[in-house]
Length: 299
Image (cartoon, rainbow, N blue to C red):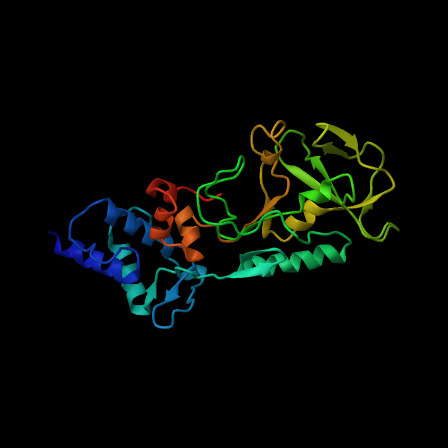
């Protein structure tokens, strides 16, 4: 038994990165993973105070500057002591969820999305609910096109109303982005006012939208005013569209034109994202995720 390693393990237990009883003083994967987990987390701004059970985040200048190696090197030992002195622990449940329309999002995501809804509305467009999907339950995906590691699971992704692209009552015209074939879509939204005070009118054949039923392009209607909805959603740098999945031209669910996700402070692993909204490693294992699953990138 290594007494020094046992002391490090005991600290990691106190900080929430190892389960009770794991301080056996023996090297192994459980300790290496815990050290990597701690190093990754320390390189982010998120902290939770064990004294108050409230967030105690730090500035970017104060995050851990060491490497993620799984080794208890000098820099890591110094950072562990820093956490202990500040009574910081694993930020499990750092964020709560907030209701939006017919679903919910992580609280910070919900606040920024709500502001974006108002911005778009003021320009004559809409990204109002009901939404196709917001926060999704924890668990492996069973639906074609869905990801088991989706940002939906942690409440930082939102699916617009697909019905708004239907011919009846249509507000959305979905186009292949320029250059065509990049796998991204652009959404044009018909504005509330059609007197030229909102949006922009396009000339015949200037913009072509994709018909998902006929699987071919048509020209955007000339003389109708549209808001470039994709530009509006991405303008503040907080939300982004995603690439269509391969096979989108034959399987509609893989087009993903409706999906937008939150950009700030993406975590390195799926586990790291999940713990911020309260899903522990035990929760993830109970939901069928392996350690390799937990260690992969989210999305």
